[in-house]
Image 1: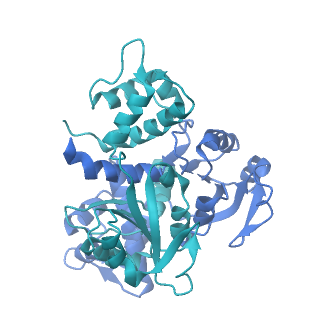
Image 2: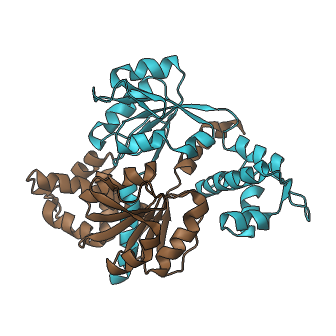
Image 3: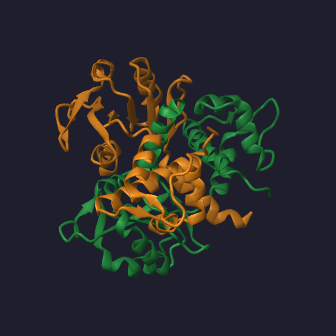
Length: 208
Length: 208
């Protein structure tokens, strides 16, 4: 299969959530134009994105909603449920623990880890906060595949190193710094400040 | 000036925070190798990124820390303070309101807006929660340039339309949907679920 652009993967994730909402309403077929309208995209883009994975649709009829969603879910690696830990029980870590967008897509947050003794032992919406010392043991024992890092940047590389040693497969890093991982570990950085500063750059770009 | 890749802008934001931390420590000069080490990047990349904006450094001496940081701050549009509102006082909106990464870079969150009467009148770390009905009036009166949208996706386009009508210049959207804005308004989407699903896709990609 040809290499799929990351932007396409991102849009598939959006299409899938929209098509999933149609499935819940009992709708059986959907056209690329309807998907495009539902996600504020263009029909040509929808068709192009779905074409990376072969022909799902029937001309004039559209896509079978259930089958299309199942295929996208499979492509995105979401046929299985993923076990997740979140490191950092601050504002952002707490918000991510309670974020329904993750739960709805099959991500199970089993625990949050923090080094603050005042937080350890508490729960965030039912998810326990454990001491950071127990991180490696828990990741191994519970076969955690994904770690979400929401600690201050000074601690982020150390936390990721510990996750990697414990056998984590992927890291979603919210700490505002660049993190090194071995090539077999997937990493994505979501730097919230970078996103704001790209906006302010673009607002001011015409001044140069 | 040639068009600067968005990835470069993102890295400038990271460099700037690192160089700013050196400035606070009283350090006067820094080499590209030192910046690279501080942000886990490569010296060649640092030099290439900074070269987009002309020569800041002196061969063999490095960059003047204060002057380099001032230049990047100016490039990123951060010489002025930006007034921000956050729409949505849920978990994510609350976390963003308290996010120190924004405050540290000169973003002033003046208010949070929500339609929940039980939240209106409360404060989040000193920032007042106002009723959504007052959004347009507040944006106009306080000359708000940036709106951060953290509402459920069903309401996101409507909220952005209201922000645009009130004169907002840029939107950072966390709702998991595609939002339309007029061409003069800058928008960035941070879809947290997309980021996780790109990871799970990449983990499973070798299965196709």
